[in-house]
Length: 193
Ligand SMILES: C[S@@+](CC[C@H](N)C(=O)[O-])C[C@H]1O[C@@H](n2cnc3c(N)ncnc32)[C@H](O)[C@@H]1O
Image 1 (cartoon, helix red, strand yellow):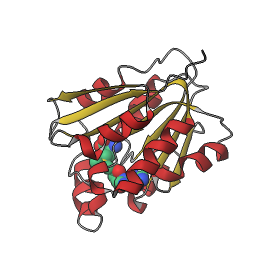
Image 2 (tube, helix red, strand yellow; image 1 turned 120 degrees about the vertical axis):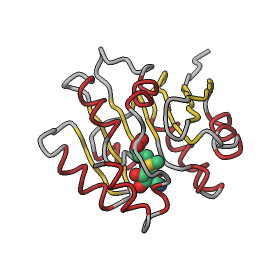
Image 3 (cartoon, protein in one colour; image 1 turned 90 degrees about the horizontal axis):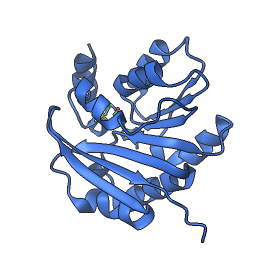
Image 4 (cartoon, helix red, strand yellow; image 1 turned 135 degrees about the horizontal axis):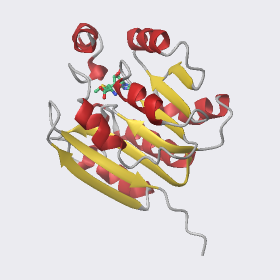
């Protein structure tokens, strides 16, 4: 069902950048660094039809919030229908760079995690820089940015921007997905000495 939605929508919206959602193994792999025992504010850029959102919602504590920022109108309709009975899931048809305003609308000061499937290699330099810088600014100290991209992504498309802002940046290749992924874990550490 989701794969059909992706194929139908990518014909008119190339920013969808994939013909199928992330595999369930990929979702678990990317979410393994999330602490599901505490209250968290989790933001997702480009949730698509909600493959990560469903997993997050099943694992997060009831007081946690999930904020979805998705540009594609048809995917937003699917998400609004899927999560209509879940008051802790907030859905916006916006672009990721508006994250600061949307976090305020949700009455939160900062986020603990930002997950992102948006295609950084499609964006120009200014947009990449704005999204990474705004993401850093909404994260709490110790907060983590978890972008996942296709495996052939070059450092100049994302890693170099992460290194410009985040104190710790790790990346790895993950093969149990079609196509394989390059995943990143960028942690904000505000040093107080
Ligand atoms: C590769 S799909 C990933 C979908 C889903 N997260 C998954 O893992 O299967 C990329 C998604 O990012 C969305 N997107 C692209 N650019 C965006 C932007 N600037 N802001 C928010 N969403 C964006 C697309 O509409 C699409 O839903």
